[in-house]
Image 1: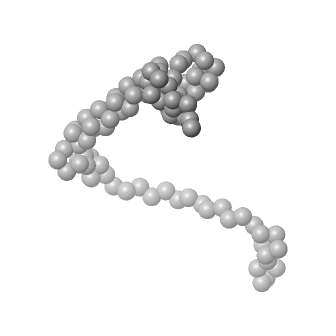
Image 2: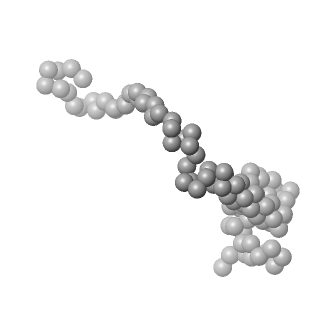
Length: 96
C-alpha cells in the first residue's frame, strides 16, 4: 500500500505529482515543504486555473468562439519534412 498523510490525506505519489505540477518537486523532495503545504498550493492553483478558464469562456460569448478568431484568415506555413536517408536504399538511377 502507499503511504497516506494523516493530515491532508494525500499519498506520496499524489504529493510528488502536485509538487511537480507547481514547480516545487526538488524542494519537496529535499524536505523544504511538507505534503500538506504542497497539496494546499496545488489545490489553490487548480482553483485559480479553473476560474480563469471559466472567465475566458464567459468572455467568448454565447457561441463559444470570439468574433476575432472566427474572422481570422488561415495562415499557411511551408514546413520542409526531413526524411531520414536509408543507406541501403538507392533510387534506380543510382543517386540517393
